[in-house]
Length: 355
Image (cartoon, rainbow, N blue to C red; front, side):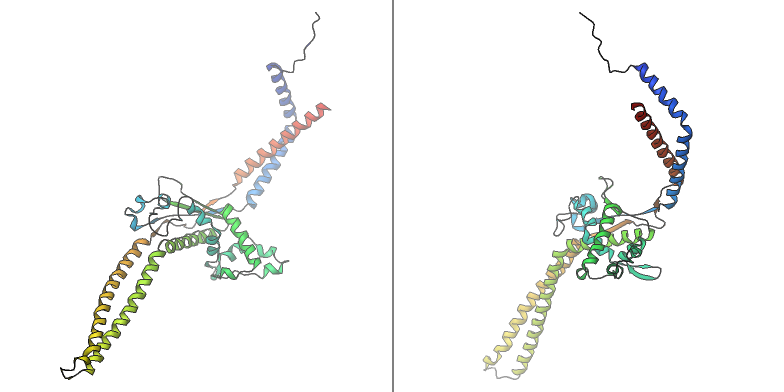
C-alpha cells in the first residue's frame, strides 16, 4: 500500500512561540505609531476629564417606627423588615417588601416632589424648573415656542397640566428614575433604608433627596392612619351633634319649669313636658359620656396608628462627588488608544498576509 500524506492543521508549541515572536518583532517595529496613538489617547482622555461634569450624590437614611408594633424597629415585618414598622395594622398592607422602593420611584411621588418649592439664589422656583435650568433645556427650546413658554410653578395642580407639560415631566421622571435615583436596603440585617440621588448640580441633588423623603413620608403616614383618622372624625361629629341635642334638652327643661312655676299640685298633666325633657337630658348625657370616651380612645388609637418617621442622616454640603479624574483620563485614554492601534495593525497585517 502507498503511504498517503495526511494534512495536519494542528500547530506545535514551537511554531506558536515562533509566531508570537514574529508578532512581537512586528509590533515593536511600529512602536512609534503605537506610542503616538497612546499620546493622542492620553490627551483626549485628559480633555474629557475637563469637559465631564462631576456627579454629586446626596444620601439620606431613615426608618419608620410604628408604636402599635410593640417592638418598634425590632418587631417589624414586611415593610418593617426593611423599613422598621409593623404591617399588621390598617392601611399598611401596600408597603410590603420591594413595594417600598417602587413607591419612592413611582411617577406620582417623583412628580409631586418636582413641584416642591425651593429657594435658589433668593428666588422661589419648583424643582422641575431647577432641573430644566441645570440641563439648559430652555436654550434648546428657543426654536420651539410651545416648549419655551411652559413654566412649572411651585405647588401647581398636576391635573391641569397640558400635554406638553406632561411630556416634559415624563422625560424628567424617566431621567431621574433610570440613573438619578436609587433606593435600597444595603444590609438586610439592618432595618434602615438608604436613598441616593445623583445630579451634576449639588443643590438639586440635596433638595430633591430631602423633598422626596418628605413626600413619601407624608403619603405613608396618611395611608397608614387613614382608617383611624376617619373613625375619629366620625366620632367627633357625633359628639358635637349629641352635645347640641343635650344643650337643647337642658334649655327645654328650664322652659318647662318656668311654665309650671307655682302650679297647682293637682294639675300634674302640666308637668309632662318638663319630665320628658329631663328624660332627654339623661339619655343624651349617657350617650355623650360614652361618645366622649370612644372619641378619646380613637385619639389614642390614631397616635398608635401614626408611624414615627425618623431621619437618621440627611445630605450635608459638600456632597460626595464622583468625577472623571485627570490621571484616570490620561491612563485610560492612552491605554485604549494604544490597544486599538495594536488591534488595527494586527488586523492590517493579517489581511495583507492573506492577499
